[in-house]
Image: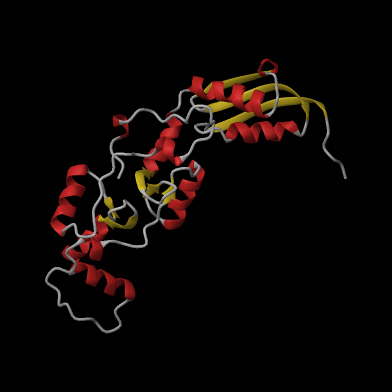
Amino acid sequence: MNQATDRYPLAQPRPGTGRWTVRDVMTTDVATAHPDTPYRRLVRTLTERAVSALPVIDTDRHVIGVVSEADLLTKLEFAGEAAHRRVLESRRHRASRVKADADTAADLMSRPAVVIAQTAPLPVAARVMERKRVKRLPVIDVSGRLVGVVSRSDLLRVYHRADDDLHAEIVGPVLHGLLGIDPGTLLVVVDDGTVTVGGAVDRSSTIPLVVRLIAGVPGVIDVVEHLSYHYDDRTTA
């Protein structure tokens, strides 16, 4: 349900949070359907909006299902075939045959819909898409109402962040804010999303923490570490 990325501004986190969530990258102009939306209107909406699926919502904007191109194509797949049940027909094939005779979103949609909260972190959304094998997720608020849609390409928009923005977040909220490190003691260079960090920290145990936190900044592609330490606080056997 994502439209061309260049029609939207580059994603930015909510001021003061430093934490990117689905709400920061989702598309809010969402094409939807209702349970009684007829087949032809579903096809027209998918075509006109250049999307591959539609959330089906009730009168309170709760998502009750999703109608996809695959759901609609069953009518073409079974066109001209006999409607009776075949011997040894699989459950999936039988369900597709039933959809082939359906005329409204209520009978065509897949349910329950896989949705995600607008406050979910981006990695959670990515894991849900992978686990459920879907390309997009309807996004809901705390009341369960549809507020947007997030797609794989929406999640990838985070990697459009400018190097200067990444640098500012790393030396400010991460190094100084979370770790209490004076940014002037470390050299941080960001080049096309790859962060190189050098200099010396107080303790050896701080190095993996620095790398992990920098790698967790949305938009960072890789971290190259050239750090030394003043005191080795690692335990020895």
